[in-house]
Image (cartoon, rainbow, N blue to C red; front, top):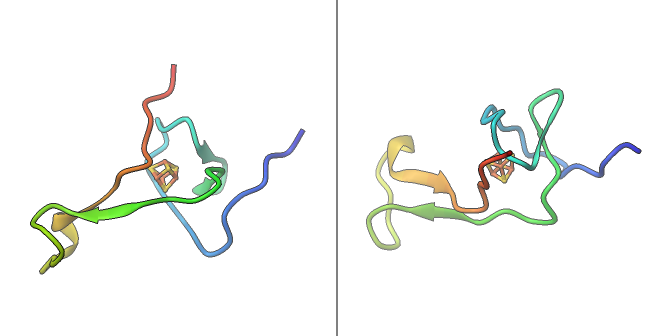
Length: 55
Ligand code: SF4
């Protein structure tokens, strides 16, 4: 059965349980956080908090 994926979300973290072919994400929703409080100043300071290691 094909899983629903989030529209408009592309992700290359292919060892996450929610990752699907085509760099799609099958989580119900994702939370992206900033490492330094509310403000991030570049992409390295942001992360998907919904990530779960597969396996
Ligand atoms: S939950 Fe986050 S890390 Fe996992 S596939 Fe979705 S966007 Fe990527």
